[in-house]
Length: 133
Image 1 (cartoon, rainbow, N blue to C red):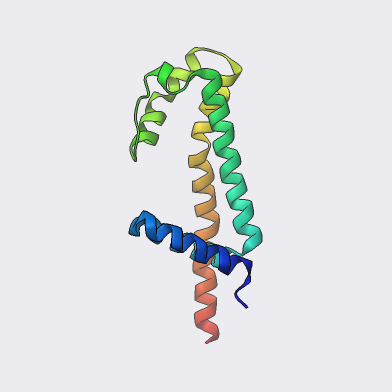
Image 2: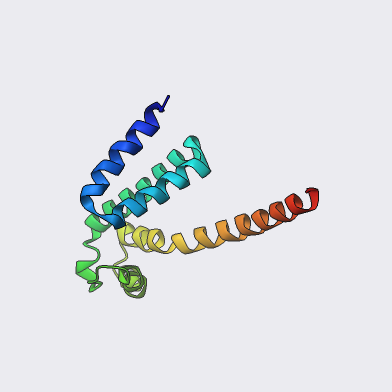
């Protein structure tokens, strides 16, 4: 029995075939991530990522970010431009602009904290696994 997830993955692969190899590769990575994390953690991580983006979008619309602050950039380097230009948000003094500044900068400490918590844990787990076998 293939199951609902298998059917959805098959449909996604068929659609991705029409879109090209890069999309199929990303979908395969997503499927692997889903299988590693499990349904509950994957859905929670995805929901948190969407919530983070929705709040950022809402605050951006409220403040006119990034166009009103000169942070015009797209592509991979856009995030660095946003970080570089984000202190301009603090000059307006509104709640939305201050909240957006914090929201933009909170991702780095969050990723750093997760890395400091998860990576040593994963290394020690692998070391324990090697000792037992």
